Length: 94
Length: 184
Image (cartoon, rainbow over all chains, first blue to last red; front, side):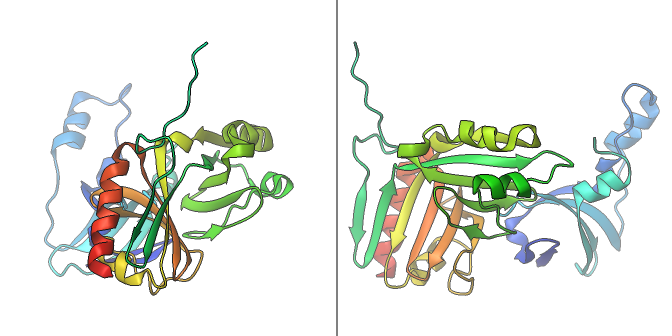
């Protein structure tokens, strides 16, 4: 499987470490969110057969976090973004 | 007064030099290294130009005097300089960039090997997944050799520089020697 890194171009998936669902970016505010919301965030994952947004870490490259949109059935990758751009666009990063 | 002398990454007084067939592996102890990371919202280029610090684009190495640099991550570079004149390289760079960048001293975190051979491609294809024959001169990337995260800088088809973790210097050298035996 080849991941098209937004900066470095096509790279072997072997260079990356898989973390999981990209919804991890949307961590609730620990000071204001209730325990139910945190429980949802921590434990509840969807497991779609189809398009899935997930976090990959380029360990053997520039060590950037990526948000990869991948079809879990066909393994087709339709979009690769820098996770920091995604996080900032959602107002996550400082 | 104690008489102290620095030891190399391999625990010796002098830099190691190994020849296996046509491959020469030379440890370098005369290189000072520091990382430069741009703080958010700061453009380092003006200060870099003024101080003569090359900050090349993604996956590139750019040499200069006294500073050379290679890209390691978005908005982050490793900068090297001669140890004799720039032992305190982090202080030099801090003075150049001020509050625009975060600088960390890296000299003693790495072991540096310069490899030379008529053609290093057969050796590198045994060691890592970098397409050494395919990339251009000045290509710089992080890769894994013998389970160790290393930085590889291609100077030419027959010359490259490797930065490996200092605490695993002997393991890395062994891997280079073993692969060189097989490649020659």
